[in-house]
Image 1 (cartoon, rainbow, N blue to C red):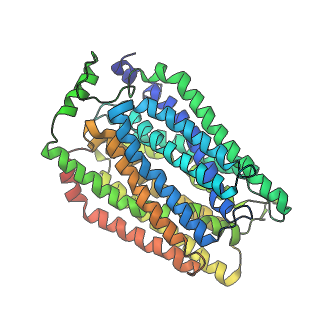
Image 2: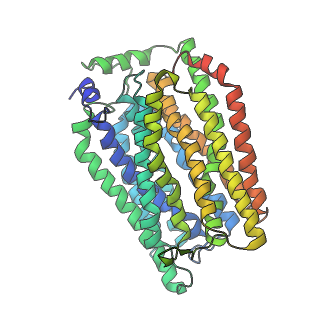
Image 3: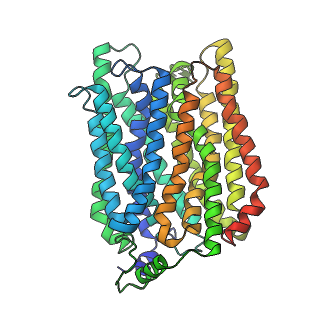
Length: 462
């Protein structure tokens, strides 16, 4: 199947069928990552590792930061040497190996298992993450109005995996309150093993279906002296030989501006894995009484599923909204501004909840649920739109490289996130959550002010 046939082989929903194949692969990869993420900070402060909250937050921040740094290298290697598709395979294998290494803490030194496992996941993610997103972009023509909707559907796949992962991995891996110490220490490995199994399922699905749904897209690197007979591959090879134009440099300025603002979005967003996880564990009533059901017992890791379920619920609405608006669709800078502002509202909610906790004790889970609802709406205005933005603005020959640079927003954001969360025990919780509330809303307003200039740099790209 040629690249053109792949692009026109559409489903009843009007998107290329390859989108739904990649949707499934990404769903399992995110199951793998978010299953581990729901457990990681809690695992590090458990008796197995024994780190303080400050140290575990710093390590968590460094780990999640490096997860988003290595895609810059992985994207470049894919573009120049091994191709996007081979990179995805390598990345999936390494990430699965990392999860099973984390689960080996009873066989080897726990700290060694932790460090080695996280290192494998970091490297594997570098090969995987930028390249699967780039292939999604290549399924569409540059000015295809379906592109934003396609990336939102792809983003929904990410969050289906992220929704189920905390329940499955949290149920299997997080010890219950009051559990025997030895049994609790042994339980964590089952969560990590479940995460690794999810990645293996995604890898098998990818290997058996990629040729059918992707044709030659992403199979080969963009070489300067390609002799391919495929017209699109020749066009890519010719583009690799040409210097960047002024318009392309302007578009790069726009990408870098969006990336800068996204740093702060992700710094606040990634409180979910640390400070908000600790808040769920310590400041939230985990044994609520529900009408007609009675008392239930929750685990802190379950709250990691709240954001993904809201994404699954809201993503189709946002995808249809962007397409239905057509020419009236808000510009990318406007969407980014709303993303930041809504996230600020979310943290204002949890800051109030923290104040209630400090005066009255554990609070209702509804504080976290409403916080995540607003945070999700902000996320849908920014994160999938950011992925689509890179595929629209980046020079063709550096597509995966700039996808990696976009992901570097999460690198710097997670470093900052770790620093913020490390103050969980030294700042008041109200202060800890007020910083993201005020900061995010302020950056949203600044983005709106800069909209005209950024649109000029984009040269008509919508």
